[in-house]
Structure formats: structure tokens, C-alpha cells
Image (cartoon, rainbow, N blue to C red; front, top):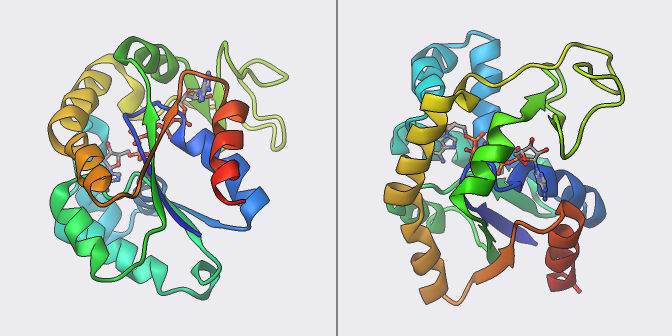
Length: 208
Ligand code: AP5
């Protein structure tokens, strides 16, 4: 099964993907994670996109599509994948059609107030990327990862100004994809203000 996770920043796409991928044996491909990995390793791509991510803007369509196209060629994608955060523009969605088949686009529907609360409280493990929230999903020991014991960090783009910009970019460039996939008969909408388990159960029911 090949899925797209579509929704505003902080809607819970990464959290639900971590549940679904285990149960369905899918590969979780987050374009945000791929960019952050390149930034961490200081690759040429990472140097090019560092400022863009910190500000909450979008990386160019050509660079992003090329990165996803190459990732989907890898063997582990043969049994299915979750594309989390891609496509994010109409040109990316058009391009995706030329190199992958998609079974469903999952919309994470949620209010702006809710995503601001979620993003401002999000903390992540720097090495594994495991996602926490200071209130909704706190680690066992405040400020530290449950498994590795590392100090948790706040993403640069989870600061107030960047959150505001990301939401503007989402509404202008990504939200039109909801109508795009609806028209193709691929859209499945879920209330993402529910618990991540409820959202995951709803998506898992699609696979039955
Ligand atoms: P990316 O990493 O994709 O960020 P995003 O789409 O903005 O999504 P987030 O990771 O912020 O949120 P999420 O929905 O995964 O929520 P999460 O599960 O963490 O992209 C980052 C940047 O990379 C972009 O701004 C852009 O610059 C670039 N980029 C990426 N893809 C691109 C593309 N295709 N084209 C161009 N540029 C691209 O949850 C959030 C918080 O809420 C957590 O703290 C979590 O614990 C909590 N939470 C989750 N679910 C629940 C729940 N049900 N109840 C309560 N709390 C919850």
C-alpha cells in the first residue's frame, strides 16, 4: 500500500506514521526528516536547505522531487511506503504521478489553534527522531529520550515566527492538494484532533 500523509505542520503525521509503518510493514519517508538528516551531516544539499527549513519556507520542487524519486527506487519501498510531507505543492503532486502509484491520500484535518499548541510543545530526540510533546506525550524523565537518554531538542522551525510562516505556506501551497486528491477519488479524511491511536486505527481499517 502506498500512502500520502497530507496535513498542516503539527497535525500528527509523523506520530501516526510511526504506528502505521510497523503494523503494515511500510517504509516511512518524511521529506522533512531527509532534509534534516542532510543538514546534520552537512552535505551540499543540507547546506543549501538549512536556512529554508529554519525559516519555515519550502525547498524548491525540483530538488525535493529528485530526492523522493531516488528514495523510492530503493528496494525497501517495494512493499509499500508512507510519503509524509510530500507532495506539498501541485507541481510536486503532478511530478509524483510520473514515478509512483498512490493508493490513498490521507488528510489530517485539524484546527490552527491545535497545531500551534502541538508544535510549540514538541520535543524530539536528536539521533532517532522520536517525537514527544511536553504535555500530550512526555518522556519518562523530563527533557530526555526514553531509549537513548539523550537530551531532547526543539526544532528550529518550532519557534513562534517559523510556525506562523509554515502555516501560511501550508494554506497557500499545500492545502490545494486536498481538492486535487479529492478530484482523483484518492482522498480519505480523518479528524486529527483525536488521539494518534484513533487516527492510526482509522487508517489501518482502510488496509483491511
Ligand atoms: P516536515 O518535517 O515535513 O514538517 P511538517 O509537515 O511541517 O510536519 P511536522 O513534522 O511539523 O508535523 P507532523 O504532522 O509530523 O506532527 P508530529 O507527529 O511531529 O517539514 C519540515 C520542513 O522541511 C518544511 O517546512 C520545508 O522547509 C521542508 N520540506 C519538507 N517536505 C517538503 C516538500 N515536500 N517540499 C518542500 N519543502 C519541504 O506531531 C506534532 C506534535 O504533536 C508532537 O509533539 C506530537 O507528540 C504531538 N501530537 C501528535 N499527535 C497528537 C495527538 N493525536 N494528540 C496530541 N498530541 C499529538
